[in-house]
Amino acid sequence: MPRWPRRYHSTDFDRGPRLCFHLKPGSYDTTALIEVLEQVKAYYRGEPVILVWDGLSAHWSRAMRAWVTEQDWLTLERLPAYAPELNPVELLWSSLKTRELANLAGDHLADIADATEQGVHRINHNQHPAMVLPPLAGGRG
Picture 1: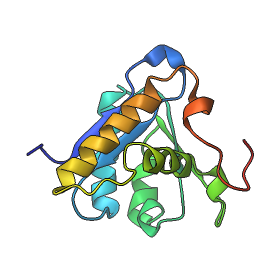
Picture 2: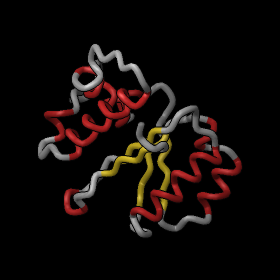
Picture 3: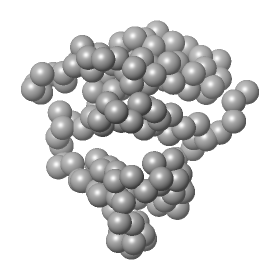
């Protein structure tokens, strides 16, 4: 059984934007998200990070906003409401659900996490991400 939480990061610093993915049992609240962001900060050693987030309340809580104001390495960008075509994670999920997670009925959460990890690595190591991440219906592609 794997250790939790699981973290996935692309490690090729010369390729520009990188996909980071974090899995844990249960849900994320503000405290859990700040812990993840502390790990991101350590992983990227203070390198500037732009984080694109949706409107989840834990993303924009008073505690989160206070924490973020003290982080000179982190820039948050908020997605507009009801704009899935702008959300990169929607493209990720679309790709994973048509390949690694298609018809998968894992016996354990670890089975799903392993398949997800394989898909994230597939996407991170593809030289032509536009060929891996299909455009969303109605989105620009």
